[in-house]
Image 1 (cartoon, rainbow, N blue to C red):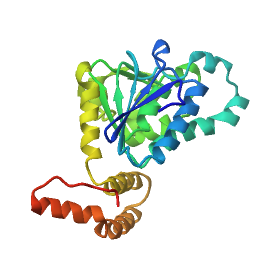
Image 2 (tube, helix red, strand yellow):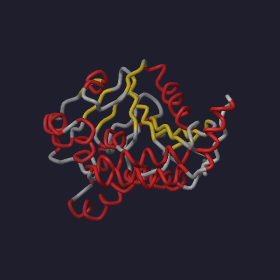
Image 3 (tube, rainbow, N blue to C red):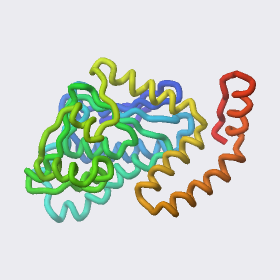
Length: 260
């Protein structure tokens, strides 16, 4: 897809493979990259042909966090004007109808880790490293790290990483639930694409509802979540894709889902 300078989007059948494309700067985050992430989210929201997304970093690293030059130039007034928009670029990614898999290679630091946390599933290369060093710079995470990290690893592990600014390897990240799977570096993209292809082959509306249902479970009461399940059940049981899935099962053939 054209129009990006700091990102690339490649279509692999029904999967969109996105690279952060600032390898010479370890894919560090700039205002231009944040703007392109928001633009990417808008494009994906409108693209029914892409049913799952894989996000990774070009070169050796996933993302080294905020470009230090940007950090050096920021002030409280700058934050009051801009941080909400930067958060929104991650929120738009998290709210995509398509599941997003982060394929984490190399360094995943600060804002880069917060970006991975905005994804639905995280697969890490065995040589990946993770840290949230904002406190060591006299800051606190402001791109969702203090909110999404406890939801993923629990409050005490989140405090260990946030307050101690510890750097952990992929094995430790898997142990505490920060990542869902660890693979050898040479298998990272293939494994992420394999899982993405499996997700993309499912009925699109059912995938969308299931993703949203898990998000609702993390953000609301059990009663609200069960009510959401009831509503999605009414829709899905009347869908053409549900009928196609049942017919294909009994006819012993591959289903062809249309997203309706």
